[in-house]
Image 1: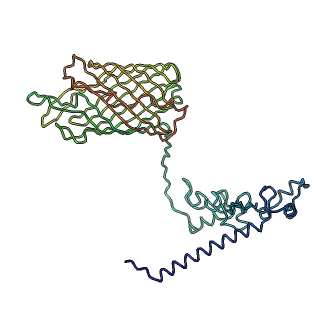
Image 2: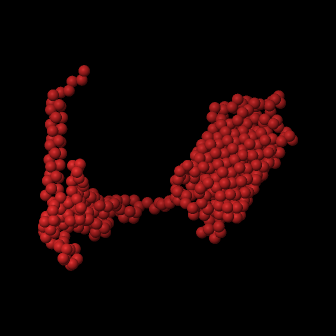
Image 3: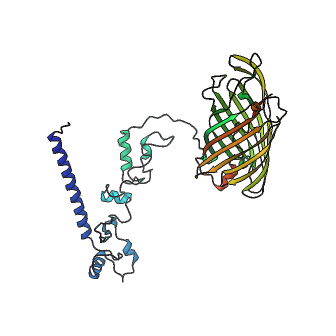
Length: 448
């Protein structure tokens, strides 16, 4: 059982009693102040009669017959009376402005009031931003002298600096560092999960010529995409884009290797967006893969389309490999070599625009390895800065492929979110990247 000392109980009781007394006395004082003030003529709920109202007009030095506005404006803030608000029927008291028009530095320094509502707390009155925290190149508190900062007429600025510096200058080391300004409306950050499969999910034959088993890959991706206008540089209605996507898949390895698969996609190039008519673009895609083999591949990706309206678009896309590579594979203790390359793709598509940044795209086509391909991509705006990303692509092998059908097929599924820190307005949609950063659907790798 917990025992509370009597002295502690006494102290708590005294504190509660003192606090209650102070609160009641403050409320009584405020109520007496409100009742003692004259009634304003403009308040329809005024408590006084016409005689009281006329008396307050006489005391204030103003009457309806007076037409001299200069005399009215000559009254100082000290002679102004606050407006009395009548007590409502429910017994509550409305707020009263104790100082008409607020408080400025001159009024604060003249009347000596520093605790009123907002008095002494102005941005440049007594608490200057930068007083003692000078900008680059100013290395002492002398910057506050001479009333350089506005609102320092009361002397608070100089006093604050003297107290901070102790009458001596502050030693400093000037740093000439560039101040980087980033236009976040150009960026799109994305992340999500993905699942894909390609012939490289099945390693080459083992030592006795038997094919090894394999399965699809599952994991996660993250990246960004950025677009910017080039009109000021080139004088043309062109924009540029640059993006990076990193993936981590096969987190627990495969039956033939314990290693995780890591990929890095980099996409960069040029494009032109329009409201109606011809729209086009060309980018280069780079892929680095690190799994039971390591490779570096490059392809070109282009698009040519016609916008029949602001929302509907028909076009043609192509992907063509620029490099192939002989890689060394290490799977299940067996080492071999094989040649891999990006698959050439040819697609026709229809795109429906959704808002400023969203779209729905459906496509179909073929590949240089006798695949028939179809799929879709969607970016669905959720809020001002957020979008839902959904993508799918399936590569159906033909009859002439040298690989087994289950190894020759390929597919890619992705689900994620995109975040744009800056709000993309109507004028900025022309520099919104035309191409998504490459993934395992748009960059399909095949074994020769």
